[in-house]
Each structure stands twice: as C-alpha cells, then as structure tokens.
Image (tube, rainbow, N blue to C red):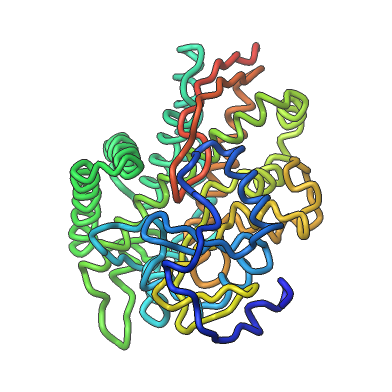
Length: 413
C-alpha cells in the first residue's frame, strides 16, 4: 500500500488488542520543538502511522499524503467524537470544531461570512494601530516577551475588533485566555474551569446584546450566527454561545506561539530579518513559509466511521487519530529541504498549517492578517530583534515556544 493511495484503498481487518499493540512513540517525553520535529522525521520514515498509549491512546499520521487525504475525507474521518488530543475531560462539544456536517455547516457558514476580504480590509487599520501601540510600549521598555506579551495582546485586540467587543474587553480576553491556556497545559482543572466560564460570560453577554441590537450579519459574528437557520429553525442559543467561546480560545492559542517562533528565526537569521525589513512586500509570502515551517499545532484529531488499514496498521472507530500537520508540513516528499526557510516556495500553497477540508481553520483569514500586520509593524519599528531561548515549549496539542524574551532596538529616525 503506497502513501498516495493508502486512504482510498483502506480495508478492514482484525486489529491487535491494546495489550498486544506496542507503542511506537512517546509524545510526552519532550516539549522541545526541535526534538519533536526530530521525532516526526523518524516516524515519517520508520512508522508513518504510529501509536501511543499516552492520553488514553491515539494514532498519529505523520506523512503529508496521509494527513492531507484524511483531512479532506470528512465522511470517514469525523470530528464529533474527538477533535483534539488531549481533549476536554468534561466531554464538551462546541460547534463548529466538534460537529460534523450537516450540523457543522450553518455555524461555519455564519463565521465565514464575517471573514471575507472586505471585512478584513476594514478591520486592518485598527489592528495595525493596536500593533504599533503594543510595539511602542515594548520599545519604551527596551524589549519584552514577544510571545507572552505582544503575541498575546495583538490577537486579543484583533479578536475583539472582529467580534465588535468593547475596547476594555481585549485586555481581559488576553489575560483570561492566557491563564486558560497555561492551566490547560498543566492540567489545572480548577483554573481551566474558572477561565473557561469567564470566556463563556463574555460570549453570553455578547449574544444577549446582539439579540437586542443586532448588527449586519456580514460585519458581526454573533449577529451572523443569530441570523442563521438549520432546517428553517434558528440555531440553539447555547450552541451559538459555545461557538463564540470556541472562537475566543482558538483565536488566542496559536498566534503567540507562531509569532514567537518567527521572531526566534529572525533573531537567528539576521540577513533575512534585514531583507524583510528592506522589502516589506515579501512579508506576506514569508508568513506562508513561516506557517509551514513553524506550524503551531501538532495536529487535530478525528475518529473513523469504520475500521481502516493504513500502511498495514488497523485503526478502529473508537480510537482517536491525530493528523500531525506539523509533521506533514516538513515532509521532504512534498517540500524539499523541509527544515529550511525558503521564501516563495513554488508549492507553498500546499502547506497544511491551517488544516484542510471542512474543518480548515475558520479564522485563517484573520490569523494571516494578524501575523502579517504584526510582523510588518515589528520590523518597521525596529533596527534589530534579538531573542533569548527559553527551554521547553508548548505541550500537546500545540508546538512551539510559549515565552520569547527579546531585546528590541528601535529604528532611528
């Protein structure tokens, strides 16, 4: 069975029991990004469909062809059972991430409606002003943490603008989401629940307000969700709240990690830093290569509707399957010299940094804008960015630095 046709030709067989199946890898042995990428490189060549007993047991697809095919096959690879590993121990299912079509469709349609190019063009000036203010504050202090500070506050401001939240909400959102993520990574359930409830409160107040005073659906996610219909009926108000709560979290997790990783790269490669500073028109293309190279998620999960055999490994319906986007994006069969930054890769549009298929990242257009604007303003305001390495990194399902202390040198004149 070849990699390219493995999912199309998947068949059923009799799987080994959990006791008989050996573990192929240990995802918890390190959170260091370089070590994790070395692990994926080994798995791609030695065991492209790997298993671990960690987090209750799950499979990992590590080759590009298998990951891309599974992500595009929403009939056999579903999200309604497990969409992430590790998953919420409370078993909560929030749309659209944890829903399958057709239930998934109206939530996704409503969010997509508010992320069209014209809307983002109207949001960009405000996001740019937020970036300049936060960078100016850090420059005044001589530096700061480009992941935990700038990388957290800028997405909070951008998310607040997208949701049309009051200006005083963004700092609260940044603080709350950062605390939620930190507690999630350390399995601090009490703090997870407390911070999650705060974000639910933001979402509930937003939905209640839009119910009284709706905005144009194309300009406001809550109003768009309230205007949607499923079989002619309005969406469940609690599920609308859940969808907005999901958006608050997802929009705040990945940007700090990837912005931090990008700044490390620019600190290590001064020639590229200077080249992008001199030629800002290359920054959009650079963002795409950075997303490929520093994909901030190890991967999202699916389960299968029926037993499948992929590369001679049998996967059963109740077993989570992680689609390791970070590994797929460094598969040398698709991206030559995959560990190297190459501006304007001919096939960069093939990267899976935002996923693929029905569950491709709903916030992808906003995330691209945040990364582009953040990088443009950071380079425009500085003459040099020098970062400091902090051991470790984000725990599953994320991948990358969570703290990037940096010295920033202001551009003269």
